Length: 326
Ligand code: ES4
Ligand code: ZN
Image (cartoon, rainbow, N blue to C red; front, side, top):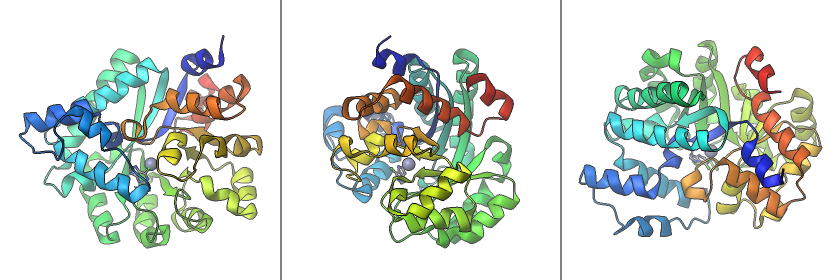
């Protein structure tokens, strides 16, 4: 079997995926027509052509505007169903999906609307594709901590359906310390915790996510190599990093995929995983991320197997389930 076939066939988990970042230009166009929402683009091609980012903020501006076409329960169902159908095609058997409630509640679209759509699609995918899915609710870090507290309160009726709470959006200037009080409450309520850190932000933000928020995983974390003591800590504690290669390239965290440090982190013994982040914006779903690495790095089948195994190890699946794959 070729390396590409191994990549495609091996069962995998995806742990870092923003559902709003899986909105295709086609669905964005279709929903804008359905709801008579004016987009600043004249065709599906123009939407795709607009995806020219040079950093995280220029991407986020487009991503939040794009999510504006998601209005009713069926829109959220279609969004989730399209992603889970893609998972089925890519042999992704388990996925832990982030969603940003504040992107929707601030437009007057409530938890009842998006949670119903998400959960209906997740149940259908469990039945039709045997894919298991967990939801990760993420706070937007550019907004005040008081908004995160309010979001946590609004989520209470759905607490049983949410496995973890995360922290995303503009990293620089919004360190994890800004959210330590709300994450104390999150921890008391028994949720797992993840946070984006060390994507554009420095290694010190990764330390803060660990020491002040008590994270179970770090999203991105690729700047950990700037701090040898942090590298040792991440290795010893086996704190997972959910790395997103095409995202890093598209947002200019690296200039060339040949510079990506994921295989050197893997070989150093860190628990790294491959993920797609915002696949329709960054030019590829999960298998495309593996394939992009295989084209630019000296990657072999053992690397692919180790990364796939890490995706289950780093997941929030119960130990008994993890053992089926590891
Ligand atoms: C994100 Cl790549 C990235 N970083 C931070 N927040 C995000 N939300 C969606 N994609
Ligand atoms: Zn992300």
